Image (tube, rainbow, N blue to C red; front, side, top):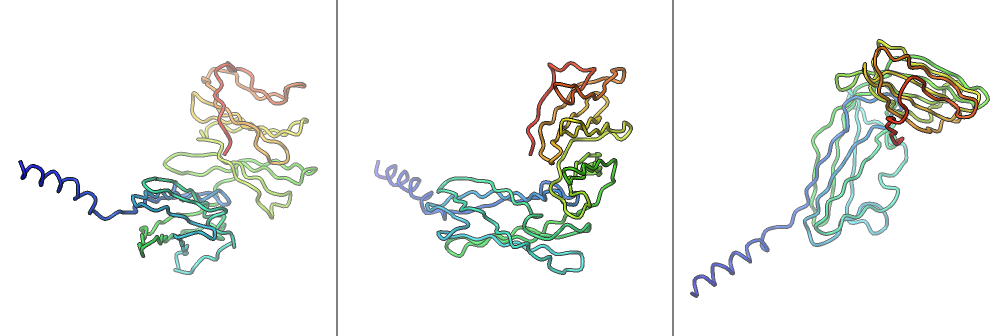
Length: 267
């Protein structure tokens, strides 16, 4: 009987003697990015310790550092933006994910190949170093362009090949194209069908493009550059789908069942 009690006690004590751990996973959401597109780098941290982990702010007990280099090994300069706009805390026994936009942190607007090195430092002198991540910035191919002089805006459709498919993006810049305000992902792009791209009388810019032979995407922006909505609609090769501007509704798509529209949130 005493032997059984001893064995049970050891079974209880052994897990408590195992060292608490901090583990992390990291990765770029792609290895190819369009110029001025957000370059998203995602980090997931699992805190198996008994104390919180905090990044950023006066109470931080952990830090993250990143270095971006070009193909020559030269360091890419920082933009001056902080890694954390506000404190990021991961409680004991919790897991949390943070996405960084490298384009906001580093001056990586020029097309080319880059490498990323990341190190996280935690309490008790724990350091986790991520493997080197390679990525590239590409200029893409300009498909079409519209200028809205009264709003000092240029809307440019740009395509790029990524993940073995063509994708269509909207780049919004000033009229002289010396400053890019934002780049939006519109969806997969079937190049055999040229997009419909219109500026309307109701301060709207609309794009209609084929994502596949059976799907089209309707994207709508304000002439100021603000995204309004993006919808994926079913179609067939025989459907006479067209983009028209209604006097009351603004831009609408004719030739599809509007009740089956799937609205997507803008990023």
